[in-house]
Image (cartoon, rainbow over all chains, first blue to last red; front, side, top):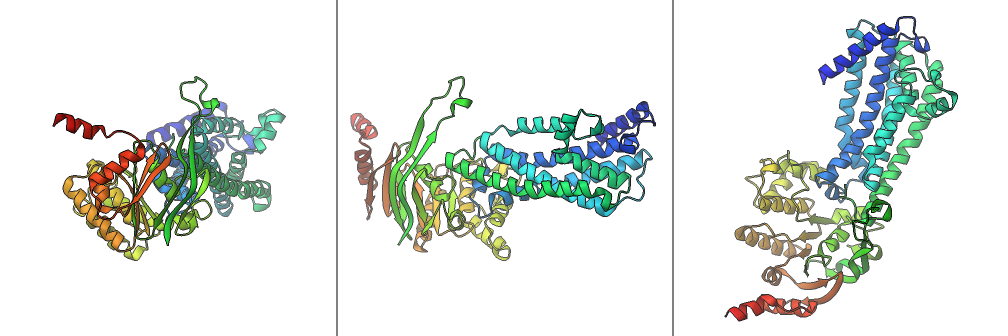
Amino acid sequence: MIVGTLVQLATFYYLSHAVGSGYRPEGMSYFPFLVVGSGVYTFMVRTISACLQTVQEAQQNGTLEVLMISSTPAPVLLLLSAVSVLAANVLQLVVYVEGGLLLFRTPAHNVNMSACFMILALSIIIAIGFGLLAAALQLSIQKSSAMLWLFGSGAWFMSGTLFPITTLPKPLRIISEAIPITHSLNGLRMALLESASFARLFPEISALALFALTLLPLGMLAFSFAAHRSRQLGTLSFY
Amino acid sequence: MDSIVLESVSKPFRHRPVLFNWMGRERTGETRALDGVSLNVSAGRVLVLLGPNGSGKTTTLKLVSTMFLPDAGRVLVGGYDTRMNASQVRKQVGLAIATERSFFPRLSGRENLEFFAALDEVHRRCRTQRITSVLDSTGLLEAGDTLVMKYSSGMYQRLAIARALLKDPKCLLLDEPTRSLDPASASRFWDLVRELRDQGTTILLTTHSFSEAAAVADVVAVRQKGRLVGTRKLANAKAEQLRDFYFSSIGELDQTLELAESIA
């Protein structure tokens, strides 16, 4: 995994060199732009899949039915199971971004740390909300990996992971704005690479807060409903 | 007072909807695992469910445990409806299903029990003691620290029973509990069942063994094709009497007996 990460970082480094220092998306150097973009994107998708995989594994190894009759509520059970993966993902993100920038001698200065923490915390809540939705889908139709792949590919293209969304045609830009990862990326890039103040970050933070406030309860509701429906249909262990 | 009550419970299982059955490879329609079943189990009693494969015995246990919800009728445990008060029901019910695929294979038996005890809110202070106690009751104390992946089928079965006992349930649901047990372990297990009943635990279990049913049951209920076709209170009944009752209830010939007579 370390080798793969280093190869990816080196690829981004030489890609940014090949593109040239004149290319400054959103006024930032291209290499750190790529590192933050791919780091945050990978973090979000991995966190969403952690919830999904928890359900898939429990279905496949036969523990789901037994877990579902324990005294712990179903959404809490899912979050508790995914918490170790979540912690590992946060650590990986920090190491990837900080390590990448330091290793290739493009350290970030005057970082707005509190804004970074706030954006990361909101992004985690959003990823968990999406994860619960993906897990609900897995319980309902048992085919949510394909849906996650579709979502991941769309977000990879439209959230500004590799290039700024301003280069996209207007209709696609509207869709980009509706993808929470776009705001996580923008916010973290601004806080980390441009030392942006809370006032400048307000649009991104408020958008993320809105997504977080909507997606987490929606995810919990959807998962509880899907679990209830699976009990009704007798399909808890289907996969 | 009735501890477990099923009131006109129906549980059909629909086959895959058309959208997922476009090749038409699966049968359509539904299977009625329970069809208007009503059943009461008094507190501190043992009710044994008998019936052919596919008659809905395991589904009944899953309905009582809240793993499944009824489509019609209602299931009450200690007065709580499994649909409306599922969390209250789960606190009272321990379920041991006859499957090996419900544990974490890379954890030891004790670690598996610690995990499930935490989820079942067994108090942290008495958790270790409780786990040791249920491992001892099921004869797994020595193998408690062995990885579950190295367990035999009988040991899995005993671990499932230990897990069901963890929260000291008021209602114990056992699905073919002695299916993989050796005779000595089975004998010890039935002693445990009698002990639990004497302590006031309500027990609902399924089996195919008439002698085991006759040995522990206060009441037997015979199921066939989702319906309840006979119930009988047992007072010192013998296995042969139970066998006769079973075959007369399901309306089939006891071919084993005929075969034995023809050989003789």
